[in-house]
Image (cartoon, rainbow, N blue to C red; front, top):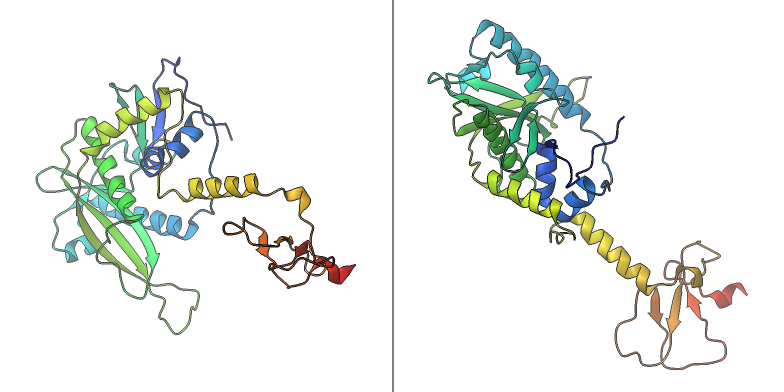
Amino acid sequence: MAKAKLFSIEETEPFKLSRNKVEEYVRCARCFVLNVRQGLKKPSSPPFTLNSAVDGLLKKEFDQHREAQTVHPIVAAAGLDLVPFQHPYMDEWRSNFKGIQVVHPETNLLLTGAVDDIWVNSAGELVVVDYKATAKAEAMTVVPEGGFYDSYRRQLDFYQWLLRQLGFTVSTTSYWLYCTGRPGADAFNQRLEFDAHLIPYESNDSWIEGTLEQILDDLRAEGLPGSSESCEHCAYTEQRQLLEDSWDFDRFPRCPRCHQTMSRVIYGLPSGPPPPHHILGGCIVGPNNPEFECEFCSESEEAFR
């Protein structure tokens, strides 16, 4: 697989940014710049293959109604008159390798986003749809506020914005087609049933233009932007650095019994709490006091001499 092209201030060609990369910037500008400008990737996680399978089946199902230009039963049950949108580029717009592509002239960024589906209402407005799959005791009928759910909202905002840049009239109302697996069955029997619900969302893409300008400013800046307070990756990195700076790893032995790293024993009256991998040993200091103790199995180095 070819390496992703890194941002260069001297480059004149539009720099490609996916919707996922824009979302990464919103979550943590520092992680984004380290990735896009320096090539430093965050740890990866396993793909959601079950979600991908649900997406693929839904696309096949709605494509049948796209060809016939009929309303899907799920849509009809919600009292909506929406049919799947027909367009020569629909397959390309839904492809993760291409997606909807727009060059933003103010920043010279090539923005891309792979939409799950696009429907059209009776007024001729395009309606953005995103498929979601989960498993809960109760079916998802409302998308909560906050957390990763806000990224779901920005996702729909971004797809709407891309289509508007191409000149389409787009409804401000988008939909999640939420498929909730039923975990309460008596047995699996090689089958998992889902409850499907359409959940509307009134999109607002007003944040996008300003965010794109901030992205370009941070990519062009000499230094790095600050870390997001909610970024778990930055928090882990900072805490790890503090630990490494305060701890001489080579001077802490392994416990001969459980093989965990032992802690240095501090005697006397310390001025504050002990640093990492240090424990208090009391005020009395004798010739046989151990220098190290294991906090995991409560053995001291003296026991193994």
